[in-house]
Image (cartoon, rainbow, N blue to C red; front, side, top):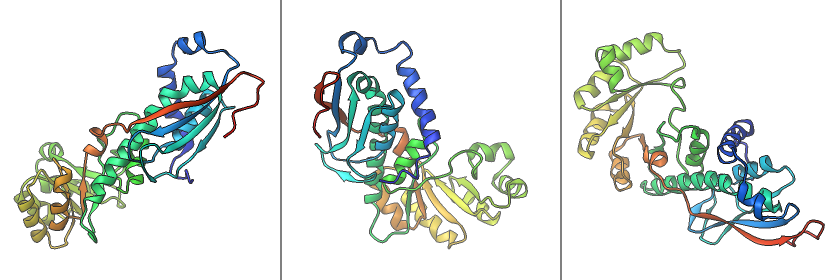
Length: 294
């Protein structure tokens, strides 16, 4: 299984922060009732059908708690799995497994949830369409790296990663700049030559203004499908078109058939529930005894 898309130093920073939050005062329950030498084997199990994602992140959690823990991914990232599938196994000191359990599950449940939701939206696209499903910057603070990776594993695409990665002129920028044309022309004059200019519009008149000003991409905000169809007709390929705002899975097919290039869905990250995954202890042994057979 490749983890090349997950930059380990950045992941480790997320893991350390999460563990510090959960272990600030230690693990009093585990230390009070689990013998120090006790060993255990446990399995991370999907309780529902899902898209597997974030398994290596769970491994980093346990490795951070205890480098001697042995972690094995049992499925590939992006695999569609059924309820009851073992996603990973972990073996080592029982105290270490218990201490890392909640943080490991929190992260992998979140990532599987995002990947699974994204896969549903992608599956709603008509066959053969050119339209992409993309995320937005409406991510959980501190978890954008993981959530955007999960979108990709679910078959979606990423929008701009941060404020510095692309020009996206929103409604408040337009007001502050003095209008659509002024905002686009100012951005064109000042932005790096490598940056495309995207502008949000919520009327067809604003669309015409953005196209005349030379916007490379136009975001059609909260438009009904009939208006989106008219926007596509008027644009005639002069700019890429992105539909956004109030997007539900039921609208994906009609928006794609209308001819937009991308549909951005904030709900992929801001409203998706965590997948149901549990960590089940399958065997324990005292210190010095032979580790459980796998």
